[in-house]
Length: 61
Image 1 (cartoon, rainbow, N blue to C red):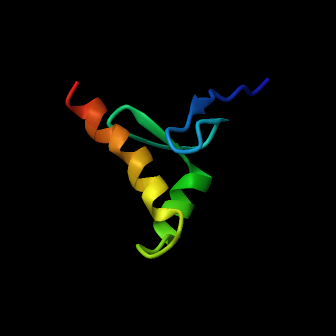
Image 2: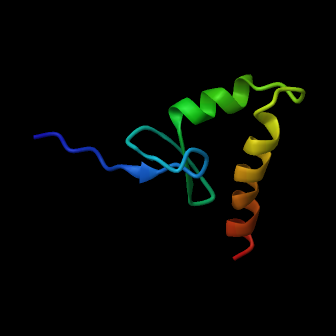
Image 3: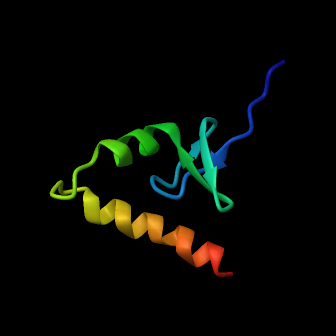
């Protein structure tokens, strides 16, 4: 039986099996792709910036 570990994404806050870990914070593959494709002028950009600020908080703890 193949069981994958699910981590909670810091962007969408959903448990996901695949993604990347940066400074002990997990970002799922779908959010990673959305972040990479988002332009500064896009409506979602401020949301991604807010969520990614958690990386700064975690790294200074």
